[in-house]
Image (cartoon, rainbow, N blue to C red; front, side, top):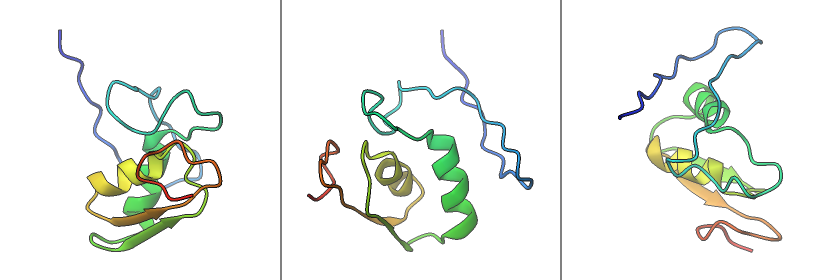
Length: 90
């Protein structure tokens, strides 16, 4: 049985409605306290960055921003004091 992936629609209001986070696809680490939903990050990156632009996340935590930025063809640098994401720098 294949799960259908919902197409992301850029929200144009201050009230955003996203489906529940699915961790079957790699978007951060759901065991990390404070993980952010990938749909929120995707909406923000599509709205405020351009393809091949640089995204810097100084508190990348679980790495959701790193994973989503790579999927959207953005260059990304992530830093954290206690990095759990292998692509982050401590």
